[in-house]
Image (cartoon, rainbow, N blue to C red; front, side, top):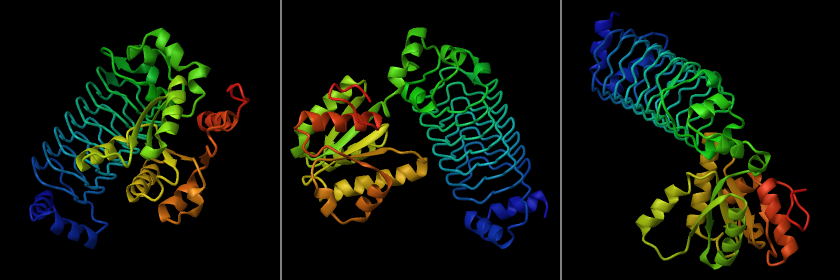
Length: 369
């Protein structure tokens, strides 16, 4: 089949195209130079396809399978690639200006010299990808996983690296900074030590860099948390929150049984999924709540998806031993439950607090052992 025949088949619709791909999985479609501007290609199977020089400007490629596709010199300006699979795709000099790739999988993709300026790259997986000499000017990389990716020669200006993972990223010292970028404490904690030239290029002052990289800052297990608890356990949450704040950890909370409108409750359900750690206070007052269990189940799914530990479980009594539920059994298999039973006792409370903070016990003075 020639290119025009492939294009003609594509115009018959995504379902017809995907059925044909399933029937002939070894055929490599050649759409080189095709004009697919603005097309609705949601969930299309273009795995391994030849898409060199193709014009996909403004196209809808949500949940599309573009794994291992050849997209060299492709025009993906303002394309919608939300949750698309681009792992191992070849995007040399591709134009992704203002494209939306939220939650896309770009693991191992080749994006050297690609234009990703002003692109929405929130929660994108860039692990092991090549972004050498690419343009990330005004790009939004909040929550992006850039583990072990190559960033040598990447152009940065007002690039947002908040809550991003840069551990093992290569070429950070040779990034080209055209001005300051945004990089928050969560990125620094998640990524570990980052090269001084990179941090300075992002505009961080030396005093702040020294603070973030000091042993006292790095020793705690998390930097922000969100409490989910019963209103009846507010006194405990207030004390624990105050002590965490004194240890440099920013805290927010939501009492599940508070009298609030359902739309606010839904907003809170989304809000608890942006923090480093989610601390669920498990007590007789909370564990029987359907909403409580539903939210823990959602967090467990998020942990699996992001391949990182997010949930911290705190018990105030033995209610968890009596409750039988799928979410609780899964949570107990994955996580140690920090026991604050009898927290009104200073000795019990201080020991449990240090286990929560550092994963180890302490002396009565509160100094980590």
